Length: 256
Ligand code: ARG
Image 1 (cartoon, rainbow, N blue to C red):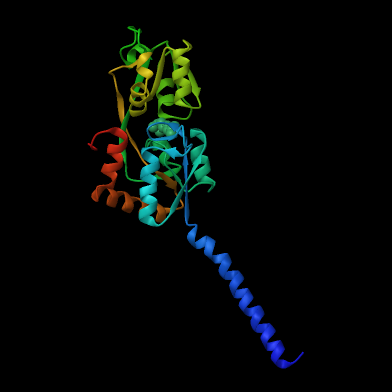
Image 2 (image 1 turned 45 degrees about the vertical axis):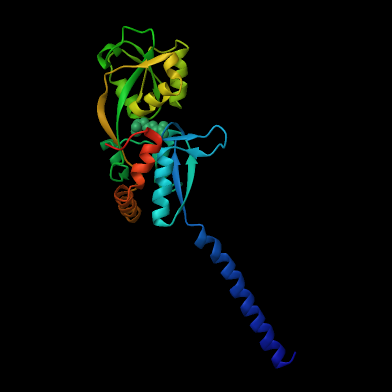
């Protein structure tokens, strides 16, 4: 082999290596993906669109807007509500956006963003029910809730009540309809949405609303940088009106 040929071959190999490594880098650059964990049967915060099968809702839109601000593509990872914090701790997801209430117990395991929604717990009973008018009236009753939620915690505090925890609020509502439960305890906006979507044919909301809760996005305690970025993006979205638009889209009114 002539010297020239060797040089050319080496040059070709060198260029090939560059090309290959270049190719390798491209996907990782464009695929800056933020994995967002959610329990996706919680309308209007996160649920699957009947037709498109896409995940939609207030939290989904909010996370997409935050992702856009920060230059991330957002991927929703759907899982059971009680699996979300373990998934965050093991690094399977980067953020939880799942109507998750900020509680001291959870704060021991995760960092919450600034609050993004004011919520509370409420009771749904059968339309014909006249016996249950407050949380006090739930004593000794059969209660249906969603597993791992603040509602389930609250239900367990009620004296002599039987508490059943379902994977989704809709299963809890079905249990009420079927007569297997006397009441559903669940987040107020989700109860309101359920009733507005046709649930009010069978069921009604009780006026007694419990302890106001606030939703936060949850981030790993190890990832302070992301928490800060998310808080900055959230503040910006509130300032530039984007948050208000998303809020109005899902709740039909301006944020309080
Ligand atoms: N806010 C309640 C909690 O934090 C219920 C949240 C349930 N969220 C859901 N996507 N299923 O416990």
